[in-house]
Length: 135
Length: 194
View: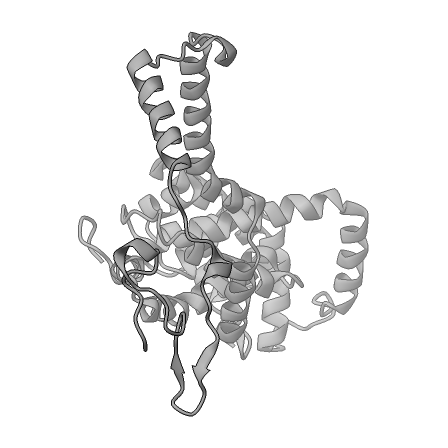
């Protein structure tokens, strides 16, 4: 384009350069911007989670809608199962458990540092202490 | 910068999208002068120029994920700057009472051209004031079209993309802006080569 007098005149306008430190201030602004989470950004980040929660809630509600009240749920346990449970309870009650105070954990020989459960005790299978030994 | 190929700005923007922050730095270094100059000539001597120029690059940063390299990078960049400038002009017009006071104080600083003899040369500062005033008298779309064409070298199609109008409409805008400026500045003709 041929430059006319207006073009020459417009060329006399100063070259407006950005002030010193402009670039640094752009980065400072970007840093500040990154530190502030706008409500829009917050919503954008939360949107997938909100959608997932809404779907989960809808599906749960839909499943629960047709279900009977929890108090009316049938408990299907057979007679044989009940009898087996009762038998187990009876068996447990019949066990002869060794009480803790029957076991003497005193240090019998302090010099040797050995433990004995019952000095000179009866360790026969019928004594109830079968299997215990000196250590 | 041929259309259809990535211009250098668009290529840097794509690199930036791919995680190269140094490419963003290249964009700032390369285009800071154009953005600042465009805003300065569009808005005149305004206190918000630097703030708006920073905002342009902040928006470029924020657009990292959404940017699509369609058209020239500069048209996209100037479109951001134009929108910000337009918002500022609208914001200023709402504070018109204050603006009138500013304008009156500015006019007081202008050189008294009527008293100048035809042969007296104008210095750079005086030319800047005269041209600022003349550009400010243009409607904003004419002003931006002229600034983008004369100072940034954009063609009609690119200016049309920035202003969101057809190249034909840009041509009309430019014609009107030039005619109006000529009418305002004709009395200074012959002094531009001083």
